[in-house]
Amino acid sequence: MRHIGRIYKSIFKWVPGSALFAVCRRLYDAFVPAMVTLVSVRLFDSAASVLSGEKEVASLYVYAGLYLLIYLINDLLGFASSIIIQCWVYEKCTALFRMEVYEKFAKLPLIALESADTLNRKERVDNAVNDEELSSTFQRTQAIVQNAVAVVSVAVVLARYSVWLLPLSLLSVLPYLFARIVRGKEFFYVKKTQAKKTRLQSYLWGLFTTRQTAKEMRVMGFDGYITDKWRDTRDEVNEELWKVQKKDAVSLLWCDGIRIAGYCVSVAVVLWLVIRGDVTLGVFGGAITAFLSLQGSMRNFLSDLGRIAEHLAHAADYYSFLDMPEESDGAVQYPGLHGASVLENIAFKYPNSDNYALQSLNLTIRKGEKIAILGENGSGKTTLTKVLLGLYPPSGGRVLYDGTAVGDYEKDSFYSRVSAIAQDFVSYSLTLRENVAISDLSRLWEDGDVKASLAEAGFDGSVGLDEAMGREFGGREFSGGQWQKLAIARGLFKDSELIVLDEPTSTLDPLIETEILSRFVQAAQGKTALVISHRVGLCKLVDRIVVMKDGTIVETGSHAELLSSGGEYARLFNEQAKWYNGAALNLG
Ligand code: ADP
Image 1 (spheres, rainbow, N blue to C red):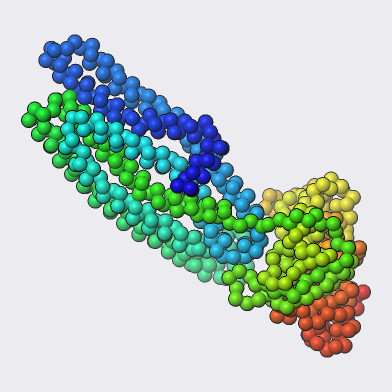
Image 2 (cartoon, rainbow, N blue to C red; image 1 turned 135 degrees about the horizontal axis):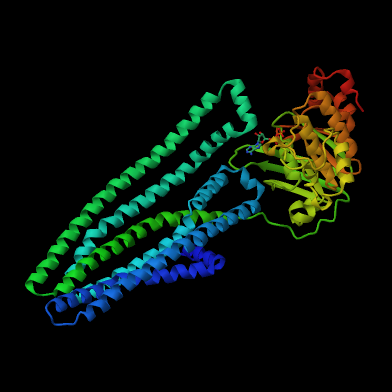
C-alpha cells in the first residue's frame, strides 16, 4: 500500500489534470454495466409491451436513446483517455520516474557503484521504468477498484431479478485468480534472477559496438567466441521467459474453458426461470447481457488482482533503490590546505571482496609537496588516491586535512579545490575548448587560459578551440597520447591546490611518458601534487617517492636514498633500467 501511495502521490503531483481525468473516467466505467443492465431490462420489457400493444412505441425510443447515450459517452471518454493517459500518465511520468532514478544514482556513494548488487538493482529498476511498470500500477489499481465496483453494482441489479445468477458467475471465473497470482510471482522471479544475465548480455553486446573492443576482437580473432557467448546468454534468457509464458497461456486456456462453460449453464438457468414464469422476457434479455459483463468485470478484477503482485514487486524494487542511503555531505567549509593532509592507519576493503586493498597505511603529505607513488600493478596506488580524496570512505583509520576528517568538509567546497586525472580518463566528443574547460566552466571563454593549459600539457594538435573532437560526431580524432595530454590539460586548467595524476601515461612509451610527467610536475608548481606510476622514470623530478606493496607503504624517501637502501625501489629501478636509455633516466 505504501508503494501504491507513493506512485499516486508522484503522478498526481506531476500530471494532476490527467490523473484526475483517469480517476473520473474509471468511476464512470465502473457504473456502465449496472446502468446498461437496468436500461436493457426496461428496453426489452418495453419492446414486449409495444409488441403486445400495451404501450406506445415512444417509450421504446426513450430507452433505446438512453442505451445509446451510455455507450456514446463511454466511447468518447475512452477516446479522450487513450490520448491523455498515454501522453501524460505513461510517457511524461515514465520520463520523470526515469529522471528520479538518474538523480538518485548521482547521489549514491561512489563506493556503492563498485558493488555488483547495486548494479543489478539499477538494472532491475531500469527495466521496471522502461516497461512502464509504475504507470501501469497506477492504471491497474484503478482498474481493480473499477471492476470491483462494477461487479458489486451489477450483482445488486441482478439480485433484484434472481439470486441464482450470482454463485454461477463467480464460480466460473475463480480459476483466473489462481492463474494470475501464480504467473505474476513466477514471471517476476524470472525477471529478477535474469537481471544479472541481461547485464552480461548488454555488456557482451557493448563489446561489438565499441570501436576499440571491436577492433581488438577482429584483429585477435575472438569475435566468434564473443558472438557465441552473447547468443548463449540471449537464448538462456529467452528460454526461461518463454517457459513461463507457455505455462501461462495453457493455464489461461483452461480458465477460459471453465468460464465459457459457466456462461452456458447460467443462460440455461435463466431460460428455465423464464419458462417457469419467475422472470419476465426483459429480465431474460437484460440478465444474459449483464451476466456477460459481470463475468468480464469479475475476470478483469481477478486477473488484475493477480497481476498486481508483479507490479508491486517492481515498485518495491524501484522504491528500495530510491531509498538507498545517499552520500552524506559534511558541514565544514573547506578553507584550503595550510599544513598537511594525513592518512592515519588506513585500512580499506572493496565491497564483495575479502581482501584488504589497503592496510596499516600511514602517510603525511605537506602542502606544496610533489610526491610520486610507485608500486607494481595491484599494490593499491589508485585506491590510496580515492581514499585520500574522500571518494571512498576507509574501512578503518582516518583521512585528515589540517586535522579535520575529509568527510566533515562540505563536498562542493572541498572538490572545488582538488583536481584529479584518472587512469581511465574520458575523451569527450565535444569541442577542444569544452574538453579542457569542462573542469571549470566559469572560464570556458578564457581563450588565454585554455591555450596555456594545453601548452603546459604539451598538446600540439594545431586544432582550433571550437573544433569538434572525436569521430563519433564527425570531429577530429587523435592518438592516445594526444588524448592523454588533453586530459592533463583539463586537470591543470582547474584552479586547484591539490592535483592527482593517476598514471594516464602508462600506455605511452617511456620517453614520452617521462616528457609528459616532467611537464606535469613543472606545471604543478605551487600546488600539492601526487603522481601515481608503476614506472621509475619520473622519480628524480619529485620531492619524495612513496613505494607501495600489497596495500601498504614499504618505503619513502628521495631517489638517491631509496636507491642506496637497496629495497623495493632499487629492485623496481634495476628491473626497469633495461627499458630506458640513459638519456631518459637522467632527465631532470
Ligand atoms: P594499483 O593502482 O596499484 O594498480 P589498485 O588500487 O587499483 O592498485 O588495486 C589494489 C587492489 O584492490 C588490487 O588487489 C585490486 O585487485 C583490488 N581492487 C581494485 N578495484 C577493485 C574493485 N572495484 N573491487 C574489488 N577489488 C578491487
